[in-house]
Amino acid sequence: MGIIVQKFGGTSVGNVERIRNTVNRIIEEKEKGHDVVVVVSAMGKTTDQLVGLANELSAYPAKREMDMLLSTGEQVTISLVAMALIARGYDAVSYTGWQAGIITEPVHGNARITEIRTEKIKSRLAAGQIVIVAGFQGITPAGEIATLGRGGSDTTAVALAAALHADRCLIYTDVTGVFTSDPRYIPNARKLKAVSYDEMLELASLGAGVLHARAVEFAKNAAVPLIVCSSLEREEGTLIEEEVSVEKNLIVRGVAFEDGITRVTIFGLENGFRNLPDIFTTLAEHHIDVDIIIQNQTADHKTYLSFSIKDKDLKETADLLEAGKEALSIDHFETETGLAKVSIIGSGMVSNPGVAAKMFQVLADHGIAIKMISTSEIKVSTVVDAKEMVRAARCLHEAFELDAVEQNI
Ligand code: ADP
Ligand code: ASP
Ligand code: MG
Image (cartoon, rainbow, N blue to C red; front, side, top):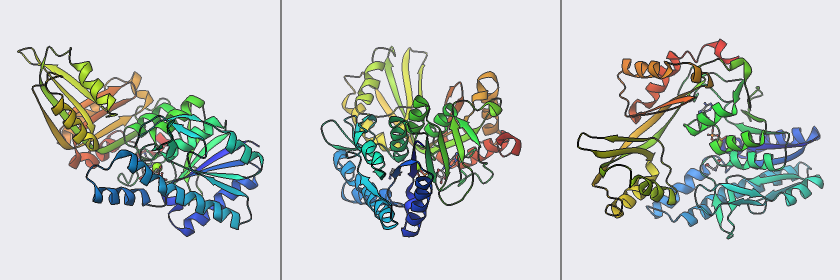
């Protein structure tokens, strides 16, 4: 028997009763003869509460200190889970990110894992122990605690599964699998039996919070079979794998959405091209993720540029643009908050012209204005008013018949 990695999210470890249930799930796998590595998130809404505390004390909490604070949530859970296992007569040991050998790039708040030194975990597994690792955290080469971005425990789990050559990685959460859209908002959403890595990557990147996008990247690169399932209900979950042949022909597999989007528009750029690299290099140097980019020219050869960012990056972006007005040859800029992105995803789209047209038509029929658009081979994204986000997602879900049983074989 090989190694398996089990990851339990906040709800699955939200209270003592849930931790007991989680411990039962761990013991089941151990009893089957697997070497078991467990990754856990902070209990319930702990991370949100810690963010709230920080925001009460500082409008812009220092990023290093924020990581120091947020990493405590997972440390509580690992020790409780290990204690509970030991109380049941199993040999278990808990490790923080740095103890587990998880090295990240030198960034706070959204660090990428660059390396995992697995010797310690391997030796503990060889000694028959169940290893419990704190999700969402690692250590930079300079020895600083870094977190991986909200939802990052999934990435810890999959990165460990890849580094340990685990047989599979199981993500236990509060829904029974990956659905055609977020079941909390789209009541007709259906569970998908299987999804390809590429589709899942788009779904996750475009707002389907059920999986951290970087976790899917790790799984794809290392071909780790990934299963999303419920920690409470005994129902078959969703398998994320390379190619999903039965469903390859389906044009649209899911609708994803996220709010908290801001559009920044810069006016009066001379000639358009010379200062574009400077603007985006400046933003990249400050780790500001720019999403949709639109550049256009007016009749008098002035260029204007629009791009979307997350609301949380607005202050830093505005400060950078303001400070760099002269150096970047910016005339003036405007920002619009209160926006959301609604996307349709499906690998069948690539050979089906007219999918985008249908999406725009559906939104137009429902009186929903589109502010920005971006497309790839397997997705079409639109930026709309955040107030219209759920309505837009619902009408697209219906128009593309994602609630139809036969779509979800
Ligand atoms: P955990 O704490 O277990 O990591 P998350 O809250 O991060 O759980 O992820 C699970 C949530 O993801 C679900 O409760 C659901 O509302 C949301 N979600 C968003 N999109 C989807 C989707 N397409 N399928 C399933 N769940 C989704
Ligand atoms: N506790 C962290 C968060 O709430 C990481 C995670 O749960 O994946 O974002
Ligand atoms: Mg999560």
